[in-house]
Amino acid sequence: MFFWYFLFAITAFLQTAVMPFDLLLLLVISLSCLEKSPKILLLFFFAGLLNDLITLRVLGQSSVFYLLIGFIIMLYGQKFRSHNPLFILTVTIFSAILENWLQNAGFSPGLVIMEAIAVLPVFYLTRLLFENTQRRNSKQLKLKL
Image: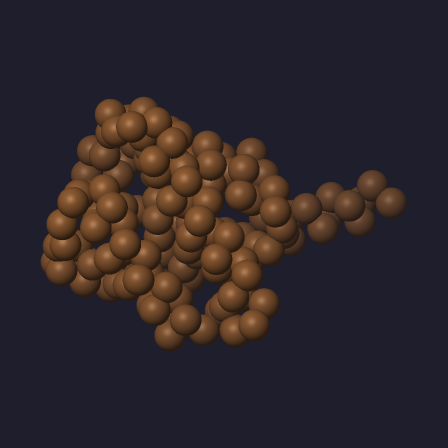
């Protein structure tokens, strides 16, 4: 779990320095499609706080938004196949439009298109990292027994 906190912190700094779009939102979407435990929501909350601190926004604005998106994906991920690329693209487009409308007080179609293009590579990289961390944890448990 520490690995994911570290990855979200690095992503928050990278996002403010280099990326024009919300890379943390893409990680929130990707990880909430993969992990269904409620403890991952705490990670989303702290990622949002860190994002607000770095970008000098009102504290808690991104946290509440990331929690809301993660929670909705966890709820609908049980009804639909959350690993389906069409589901991930749809959620990304709606959440990017909502985020642009709430945080920037406007709509930027270029940012929405960039996030929609970038979400699938981010999802598959996150899935690869998630499976590797799960595999390492299971090997450690087998060695201890």
